[in-house]
Length: 117
Image (cartoon, rainbow, N blue to C red; front, side, top):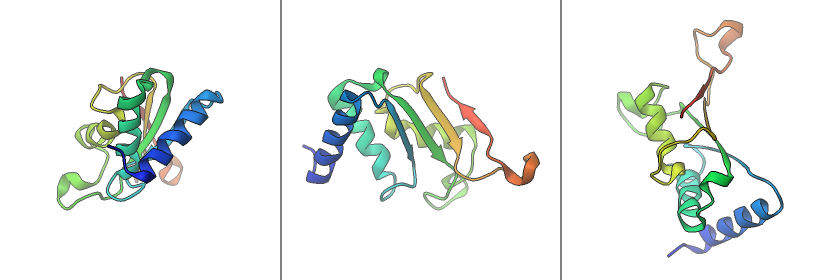
């Protein structure tokens, strides 16, 4: 059963999709310990609308202690994307970006885009 705030979020996403808005931007640090992505994932499960939405998510900032609690390794990216994908495999309509610039990137740390498929 969804909490009252989750029900409100579900209704907002339903309304947005009905109005033609199909792009959702989130990050693992939004909300409390990934709450935003978990709510979106539950909405996908409830609504069955995963294939109707372009999901953009970001990761990089520390989520938990230890070496894998931050960064942009493949494992970290896949773990960051999973809650919003409702346990399904990220699709071509899932865009993942580093929430902070890569220190080795040209241009003073511009973010490097990464897309999972």
